[in-house]
Amino acid sequence: MGKETEEIKKIKPGRPDWFWFLFPSLLLIVLFFFLPVVITLIISGTNMSSNTGFHAWKWVGFDNFRKIAILPETAGHFWLTVKYVAVTLAFFNIGMALVVSIITTHISRGTGFFFRALWLLPRITPTVTYILMWKFLGANAPYGVFNQLIIQPLGLEPQNWVAAASFLFIVLVNGYIGASFGMIIFTSAIESIPKDITIASLVDGASMLQRIRYIILPYIKWPLLFVTTYQTLSLMTSFEQIMVLTDGQFNTEVWSLWAYHRALQNYWGNFQWGFGNALAAVLVVIGIILGIVYLRYFKFNELVQEPKIESL
Amino acid sequence: MKINKLFTKSFPYILLIILTLPIILGYLWIVISTFSTRSYGLIPVDQNGNYFRGLTLSNWTFLTDKTKTLNVSIWLLTFNTLIIAVGLTVGVVLISMMAGYALSRIKFPGRNPGAQALSLFDSYSSLISQRNSSNCNIFCSPLDSENTNLRQRDSDNRGVRLQYFRRRNSRKHSITAAPWNMAHERFF
Image 1 (cartoon, chains in turn brown, cyan):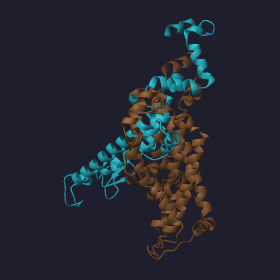
Image 2 (cartoon, helix red, strand yellow; image 1 turned 30 degrees about the vertical axis):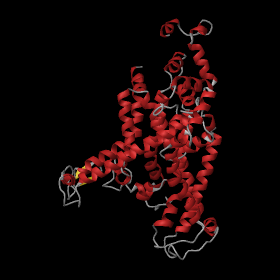
Image 3 (cartoon, one colour; image 1 turned 90 degrees about the vertical axis):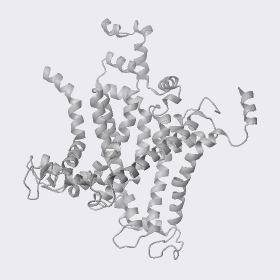
Image 4 (tube, helix red, strand yellow; image 1 turned 90 degrees about the horizontal axis):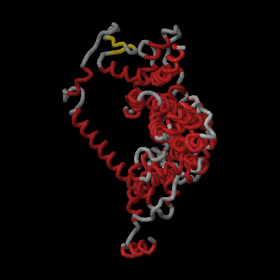
């Protein structure tokens, strides 16, 4: 094999095959992921704003980051973001996804499909429609659905739950979208567990909980780790649902929304592009660090098998 | 006993319905509100707040009416949406399939770190990393010698407990290590 490959390589000049296969993706990544990060980092070192325009700005070094460090509201936004990401991830993007995928794969096939289709609806609904739906679910009497069906029959005081339980609502709104991602991946992973293993465990008298603990969870370990990693990073940067739902009111201004407000839309009308980009840069750096930590800690390199062939 | 069994049978359905309730109610509300002038919760009302009145099709007139509600025909907007959706789908699938193929089949310098880093990026991850991290379920099974890979990975990753299950499952060991009833033997 070695000799023939050598000869073929000699005949075929130019770049190797893998380059042309990867080229389109690499181009897109450089254009839409890598360059924006570089631009963000560059702008974060300036005092560019709608006051200075694109011409009168100056380099300010790390002043923007110093400002982030001393601002009194920084800690509040930071811990809210941590809390929001952790709670949404644990209870919805992983927890709910796991529960839904386990249940829907263990009931009749048609019913399982039906419920999974329902769970996919939030993902394919336009954000504004979806948020409008949540606003009216939680709206004050007489418009709100929760008030009408749950709160008033129980004899409790109806109120606008989006404002009263704002943190719960941003978690619910993002969680019901985010859960479908994990649900799809977990479902396909659970369905690919060899049947003989499950049957063997049934014969041994394993209960449902034991099967989840000793068969399903070990089997879907890698999808689980992947979804955790991916969803952490995407939750950290997602803000559009929160923006449409509360626009940062009722103490729901997460870090990415803060950056957006400072840079592109705020009450005072002075769009601080430099400062907003510094906020975004902090998020990017945290994201990169978290990504590397996840890859190392979860040993992703063990997943990536060495392929058996070297050329096409 | 019978009630108990009924409960065990219906428990997953009940749990699932409770968990899905916000979605069910929300989309019910969307459907109901598009057919009514106003709505109190899930109940359509008319201008004066009379229950179960005010059902109307006027919210749907944009389907045929070109001028009143929108400035352009809804079908033009639908067509534009379709172009974007189909174009993006074809593009993303094609590009990430090519990258996924290269990453999964060809050995080249920097491949492993590259594949790992790619799995963190949006849109690629859901396609490419299927191959790497979720047992290759959706996308790459035709590309892959799936069975051998799965088996290999299984024996690598699974806990002692599962190997134990498998060993007991095989006939060779069942004579010495089968505590269960002979009736079950028929399954194997």
